[in-house]
Image (cartoon, rainbow, N blue to C red):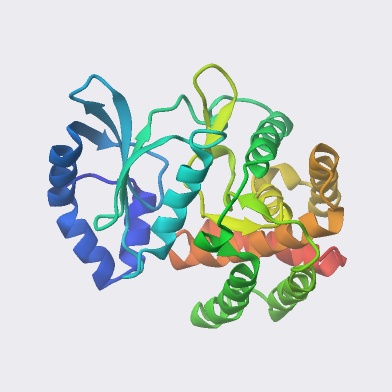
Length: 310
């Protein structure tokens, strides 16, 4: 049996029968892909959460990464959005895509350098590096946005997730935390027609940002969105939670100000998505077995809500 990181196992287990079937087929899937693409896959790499990620050596001498997503949904819409994003970008600010297999939800990707989060850089420097990369990707022309997920779909997903997951998880935080999130969501819904839309990554944190050949960074694992820039910046409010101690309100405001300074995206827009990303991710983490970390995120959001920030 292929030995996967515990985070992937947690996600697989949260999917019940679908996850068990994916895991049972994984070795055969890898053998099929090795034959199809002329590669030999190595052991799984640490750090992934959505499936198998492994270095792969090509018979042509190439150095690649093999990625096989956990099949969460019988429809491959999410996988196709990722593929389309990588095709649109063609190596600009994103990892380069060499091949994909729709049936097995698998990609053959370029091998990049180390993860930004492993380089020991101060948080502000990591934020600056991610923002530089995002600003490059936001300028990529999108000729057919209908192939990606658009703003209204994201708003609807967050609305269903905040209320539905909170109930299913037996209300792991005060109702006020969810109510504040829904108010932030109303604000973003009102801005749907006014805010310029661009190619958005959707989860651009330091572990999805890798060193590129020749300098700079590239993003991996895009969600495939065509939406407002603030959505990407909200992820950076959610990250590095320990940096908010001992004053989670003042220090979150400071980070929000830095993101505004670096990108010129309005403060209110960044904050709405920062709060939403924090609450949403906290619920997801509890769902996939990382309850301690998820509850810490919800507690942080609670402090922001009580302060009147959200």
